Length: 259
Image (cartoon, rainbow, N blue to C red; front, side, top):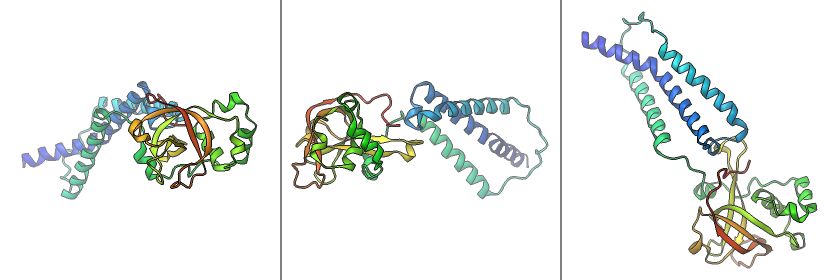
């Protein structure tokens, strides 16, 4: 009987503190990610301040819950059913495993594996105003175009005359193989994030460079400078590609996503 009472008290302790511990630990991890500048790998920068404030409140609430003397009016409650106990322990175990994974495994950006699961440029803008602004842009503005702007332009036109005097300059992204001609073409890719990494969509500019994989394996971050021209590939239906004058492997930027 004493053993059963002891087990009951232990189970009630698990039930009582499980949520508090999980919330406190997750909030602390969120604050650690924010302090280390890695929270941007998970959410849009505009939500970071709100998330940090909520995490601070959660930590304070968790500490207050632990510090508050608990009542003992439930000492006589019976043990929960086996199924309820199993579900509770499984939830606690999964939460602990997730928390341990967040601490042990370093945060990483989305990569080629994700890009290949989500169609590249499926969400590239069709906005006429964006294209008109790109058409009227001067050389200095064109030099600042990212993968986002060029993917919009390539979606809107395949007229080579448009690209006269509009080279891509130090275009930054990671290498993703082209599905139709992976031997000769890769995409210089970035993920566009609206809210968080869950809704991230890949954008990319096709680069024609036969044998590219020997020099720049998938997921390598590169800067590419070159001019747009007709696609020489017989396997790829993409009409316009970037023909590089210079390709340089670089470190992943601190903010790898486009916001």
